[in-house]
Length: 423
Ligand SMILES: [Zn+2]
Image (cartoon, rainbow, N blue to C red; front, side):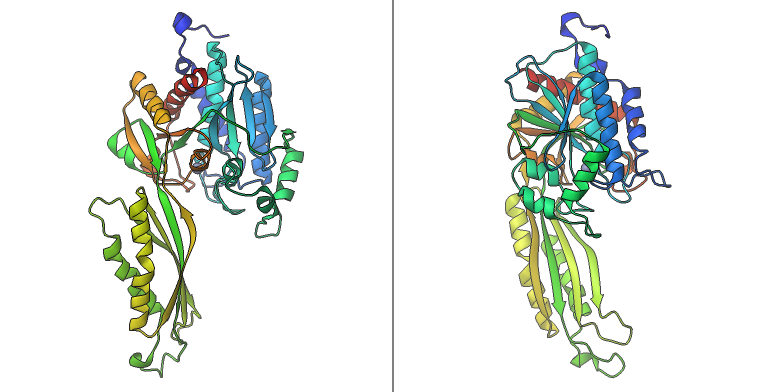
């Protein structure tokens, strides 16, 4: 339909339409819209079903096949010229945090869809099919674990175990997915996972670096690793009016000293270590009772595996030494372990070259947050493209990005996708 402005060298990125991409974000943001301008669209909810249905309608208008797999990942397929060639995938997720924004995840799905539309408009055929994908339950809020759909696709999790998981109201993943299928029908492909050539994911940065350095594109080289720990500190309940300080086994004061004593271990002149205590619970929580138990969580992240190991392994001995000083005991339980996941060298180069060719200011960077790409990277060469978001704010109803930045990321995406799909 549109004329190729560069003759036979039509560049797909020239056909990315900023206004169309922006409007699609606004259309999607209606599903689960919150009064403060954010989005509450939890995985496999009625709102999620509406978003999936709309994506399916857009795909149908282009004549593209839409199908879903047994964990609910939704695929839109633009065929290639070689029917037997493995597809190139691109996407992210449509689910949000309960007080999420319009762009986290949704951008990656809509950028992939815009890439397919730009290819159609440019009249470009690729050898391999290219598919846009919306992975199920990336956020891990309503159902655990997060990155459920991409993890299942990559064989990290077992399907039956995931389907049996329930939300806080007792609704299972299986039941919620059945309801989604009824509200937003799509052909169900019975087999989970299929061979793919490669994967690219576009995402808002969710951090402040691109904006602060005035870069338009982040070329993701690695998704950093993460270790999470439950720390349970046990002391002894006592009357706060009668028990002398010297005779107490105060679990709270012990826990506080642990948090402080860990600071020197986590100290890092390069400011690369991410050490967070994001939950702190005190029992029994009475003003007249010396705390007998404290439960707190440590989230530790680092791009380097050896450093992540050394720092994480250093937590228990320090906590034990602090507990002993007050006659308390402590139990340290690691409940999440994710190793750093490098993006594939060729995919990284393609993204970088694409940004360079389009004259966009870009930088290499590490992803501080986890993404679906970290699972897909286990089964295929994968890369990620970041675009700036306002003040780096994300998982927040005020999350914002400019139409221009979103379109620029999509331009980089589509040219890199074409390179992958024609090799
Ligand atoms: Zn996300």
